[in-house]
Image (spheres, rainbow, N blue to C red):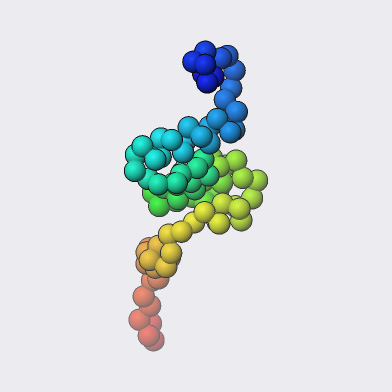
Length: 95
């Protein structure tokens, strides 16, 4: 929809998307929000939910997982939790 209220055919411009996200974010009380905040939240939530880094990279459209890793903010607690899932078999000495 243009400024005059006319509905236009076609895709929204990146500028229009950014402005709409900013308006809706402010209305929701989120402060300054842009499209990249939504993208970062999407990646963070996928990873927090336990999804694989490679799957998250594919969903983000990243060619390399190194790029996706920049969005990973789970921290040390997540690393400890992951390490605790490994079972090391106990072998009694001398047997």
